[in-house]
Length: 252
Ligand code: ADP
Ligand code: MG
Image 1 (cartoon, rainbow, N blue to C red):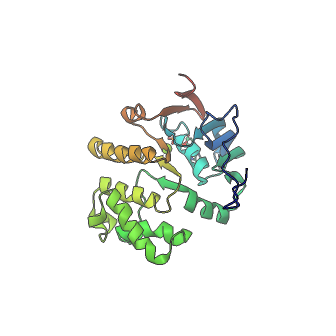
Image 2 (tube, protein in one colour; image 1 turned 90 degrees about the vertical axis):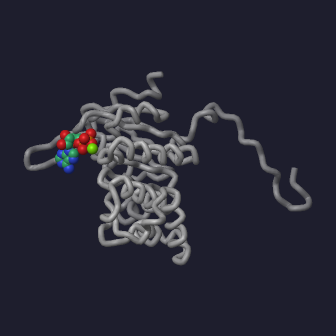
Image 3 (cartoon, rainbow, N blue to C red; image 1 turned 60 degrees about the horizontal axis):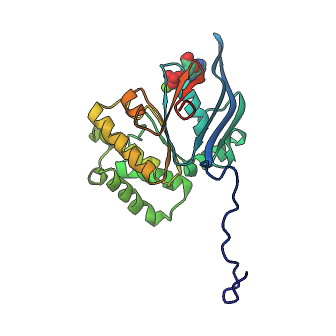
């Protein structure tokens, strides 16, 4: 029935479907193979990985050093490309994007957090957090500073905003890196051993920040060596020798 006052159709209830209970898959890897070639020969680091993540999940990726965790994560961020297979993030088949399109896409859709923070050493903490907004032009220039300060407030770093990264501790730098990852309000955060360079108390604080972000609707995929942390996420996936060998979601 059309409303005669507004001329707008009333909202329809969504049609029931067999999949309506399953969360939307926001990251999908299909048959992903990654082969590195070098002078010494070729090495297949991912051997046909099928993997998907639902919106709102907090996934830990665990496994021994050299098993292929970073390679898999780099497929999701588009930092590296599959030799074959498909990678769909959000609604975008990112393996098909050009470098420029990839950079633009990544800037808005993903926040990336690294083990060694990767803050730009010559920029202040505030400027580091503003930089992704400058690249993506997602916020009006005059709004960027205020937004960056609000994000730094969230990670309790606003008081250090005008310092250089080298003037604060590792744990504080990682909190700044998290604020930077949130700059354009991406739905997905990808972190490769974000606590790998932090003491356990600082690691706990970083984990608590992630937990809070998942509670507010972000999707997080985090590589970790820390089995204690891996036990506290909604799903743990184990990588060995270029394949997923265990998935707590599947192996309930
Ligand atoms: P993890 O993050 O689990 O420690 P990686 O994904 O970094 O493992 O590496 C998986 C395997 O792929 C390792 O054997 C590593 O040596 C190899 N590898 C990673 N990157 C490259 C590269 N650029 N060229 C050649 N081999 C690589
Ligand atoms: Mg790694």
